[in-house]
Length: 366
Image (tube, rainbow, N blue to C red; front, side, top):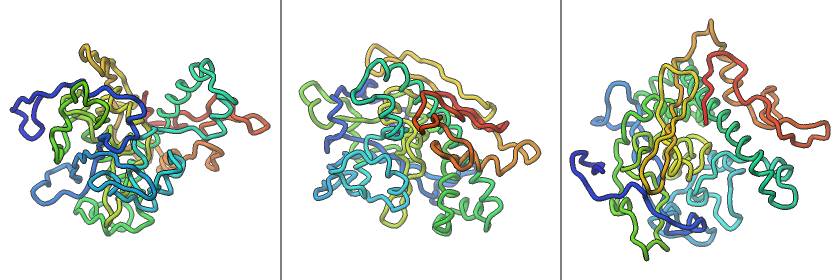
């Protein structure tokens, strides 16, 4: 593979990563990545690009309320807006909801408790899980990806029409966005990631400790596990998109960290399963399985995300874009819910709006 700082220099890094047990995901010494997004400084500016990206790779940290480990993601305090949006993703009552470390690894999309109870009953039934869970989860992911695309369209249209926000964004004056314009700024950042997904690596890909990208040796695998996308992976070119979709893309506001988009994919899926790129001419997503080698990950699904130009007002009403972008999955007042229920308000193993009811909004694929 190539050195991320010097593409012409070959270094000895195995593309397989490390083997580790599931419980190591929550160990303080397990390594994770986040994407830090910020306005580009002068030397980073170039035509067609309005963000700068850095891969931050650190150990998870404890996430405990009364304990923290310096130099880990325990040091990253999330803002109140992010904490509010992540309330359903909170994994552990012993963890600190203010710490970014508490939300690693990402679970991806999650089902409501009522839906899970109706699916599992009092015990975990493998037959029911295998018949319904994965299928419905994949369909919900499809909806969420389509909605995220719509949010980026909505944000661009809003920025062009509201308080000269587009110029503030392109000039790097992100601090001039008001608190009630947070969704617009997040959508504009996500739009930039979509536009170049799979076409280039991050601006600053190097870790403070490059050795974390070197696989561990046998006896060392009980510690310092790496839940990382490696530079040698087929996913590296699309790592910005991967980290956005797993909820591991952040921007800093003062001393706090703000999540740009809530999780859709899990950390395991972006590390082991998927490679992302975008296509400006497609309205439907495509998946192609790629065989890698005889080591993990054995097969990677290359996902081409549709990201065509925004249709004109004659083709699609801006209000319809907004309705789909912010439609709730459950009991949606906009009339676009995902879940179906019976007359007793019990969840059915069926779905409603898994795709937009309006033309031209892309339907992604999982």
